[in-house]
Figure 1: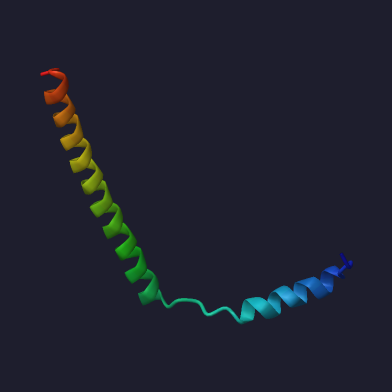
Figure 2 (figure 1 turned 90 degrees about the horizontal axis):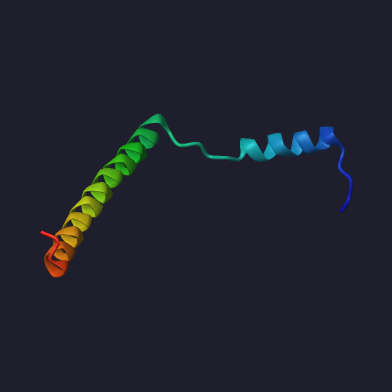
Length: 64
């Protein structure tokens, strides 16, 4: 592996960072909202599934 000058490395990092396309504030808020919505939907799905499985096992095993 070739040794790189730290100054040259920092210049390369800066050049590559300038090529990055950053999302706008609106895109970030929309994406965050969608992620939070999916978290809520997933949580409700697993809560419902867990409740059904617990209820079913209770009936099968006669725990109630």
